[in-house]
Length: 334
Ligand SMILES: Nc1ncnc2c1ncn2[C@@H]1O[C@H](COP(=O)(O)OP(=O)(O)OP(=O)(O)O)[C@@H](O)[C@H]1O
Ligand code: SF4
Ligand SMILES: [Mg+2]
Figure 1 (spheres, protein in one colour):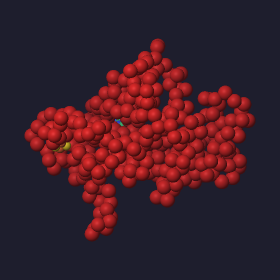
Figure 2: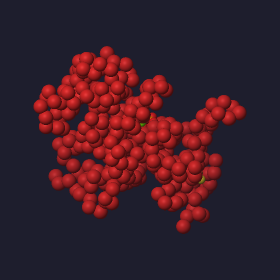
Figure 3: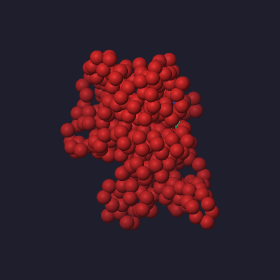
Figure 4: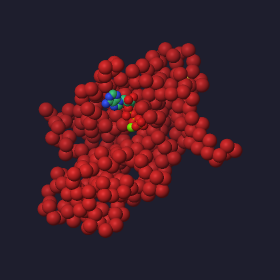
C-alpha cells in the first residue's frame, strides 16, 4: 500500500481533516457519531474542540489516529492528512510510528494510558526505545529527567513505582511527560483534567503550556469554555455530530454567530445577581440514532424556522476564518 501524499497543502498546515464521517453499527441501528467534519490545524497552533457530551469530539480525535474500533465503528473521509500524508491509506507500521512520536494523546483517565503491571520507569523507557535509537541506560535517564521536568518529586525513586502507588495528579503528570518527551508535532488532549480537582487542573494546564515546544500544535477537547479561552487561539464548536461554528478565540467569545455557541457561552457561570447561575441550554443533545433531518440544533433553538426542520444549513462566512452553519446568517452572507 502506498501512502497518498498531498502536495497542495499550505506550507504551514499540519493536519487537515476533510469530510469525516464516523458511524457505529449496533443492534439498535447505526449511530452517526460524526458527520461532514472538516477542519485543519496549523503548525504550532492550539485549537479547542468544544461541545456538550456525545457531540462527537472524542470520535473525531480518535479518527485522526485511526483508533476507532472496527467493527462496530467505521471511518469514512475524503482525507485525513497529517504533515502532507494521508493517515487513512497509511500502512499500520507507519501509523504505529506516528502514534506516540509525532502525534501523542493525553486522556482524561491516566490509568487508561499507563499499564498497571509495569513500573513507571520501564513504561517510559520502552516508549522511548520504540521510537528512538539509544542505549537503554540513556533512555532510562532521559525518562527520569522528564519526571523531574513535570514536577515529580524524588524522580529517581518514582521511576520504580507502579501507577497505583501514585496520586491522580501525579499519574496525570506522568502521562503528560510521556506525551511530550518525544517532542510530538501534535498533542491531542481529550478532557485531560476532568478527573482532577480545580487546583490540580490549573497546574496541569500550566504544565502543558510550559513544557510544550512552541512549534507543537495542540487539539484540546473540553466542555470548559474557560479552558479554551486560556489555552487556544482557535475554536471549533461541535453539536450532535457536526461542526456548527469555527473561528478565532476572539470571534467565538466576542462575536459568536451560531445560536448553539451563544448558548454554550451563556452557560458559563457568571457572578451576576444570581451568583454562579448556570444558564444551561434547555433540552438535550438528540440521539445519534435519530438526528433531525435538517439542522441538528433545531429542537433546542429559540430561532428555529420551518426551513431548519427540513434542510441542513450550509456554512456561511462571517469574517476571515470565521464560519457558522445557521440559516439566520444567510441574509448577511456575501
Ligand atoms: N463504540 C461505540 N459504539 C457505539 N456508539 C458510540 C461508540 N463510541 C461513541 N459512540 C457514540 O458516538 C457519539 C459521539 O461520542 P463521543 O465519545 O465522540 O462524544 P464526546 O463529544 O466526546 O462526548 P463527551 O464529552 O461525553 O466525551 C455518542 O453518541 C456516543 O454514544
Ligand atoms: S439553522 Fe435554524 S435551527 Fe439551526 S441554529 Fe440556525 S436558526 Fe437555529
Ligand atoms: Mg469525549
